[in-house]
Length: 165
Image (cartoon, rainbow, N blue to C red; front, top):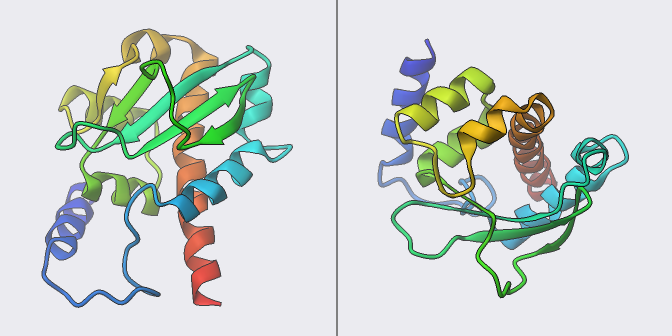
């Protein structure tokens, strides 16, 4: 069933349909979307409290494999997204890539740990920086990674809802 839905999503998102700004898909990692993601991430019951427990601080980049530079940078300090898309002098510790249609699919329906593992294995989820196998072995980090996709989906739905109102 999931493969059929993924095929349909791929087929119909690559058609040359007219784009309607209020209803069409937004470019992945837009500034507005990143603002909503930061707010969702940093909420009291958000992901930040879980990452704060382990003192997680990192620069995480997201993008698509066909582009040299990531589309988005998150500067995470002690579990909270502190800055978005600010120039960083160092390479990100994590640089995560997937095709735009794959990101859109995950924003619509967040993947679980098994789906992310399969995506990593078949290279539809790529890590240019960062160690996915080591991260996934740490239960707290693995759970946080999966939760980050749920927050990305929530941010997308919230942004779409705001744009319709």
